[in-house]
Image (cartoon, rainbow, N blue to C red; front, side, top):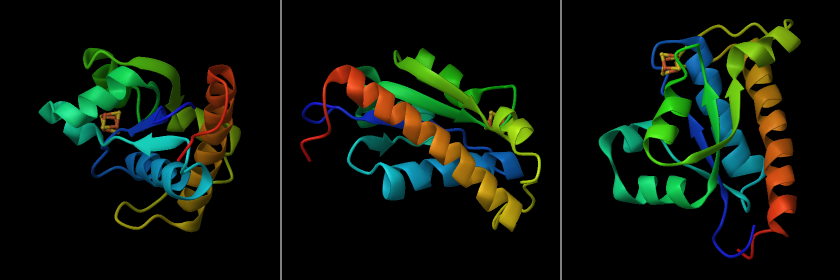
Length: 141
Ligand code: SF4
């Protein structure tokens, strides 16, 4: 990404559901550990509240959304906020490819959930790399 341009990662809020927790954990893994220079977390709650900085980040950067179920709250909200969804990641689709990682727990995920979150984060990191290459380089930060 050039300058401040980063891929925005928007996880669904999924409160009370293991798949929603996986969504958030995956977003933290990408933005804090795997691709901190090239990605930025935008919480869904801020978009729902109409937070100006969150809306501006989504309007200016490609977004990867992570949804815990078919309602796809993160994807819908990014689109409603005027953003461009570069990739929609459905936790359930990733789970279908990694059925050995069954997530359980909400406040604290079991090991299967943590591994599933890592698998989701790896897929997103690959997409971040692809978007970064398309836009011509790594972050200056
Ligand atoms: S996408 Fe599904 S799990 Fe995520 S916040 Fe919406 S309803 Fe909840």
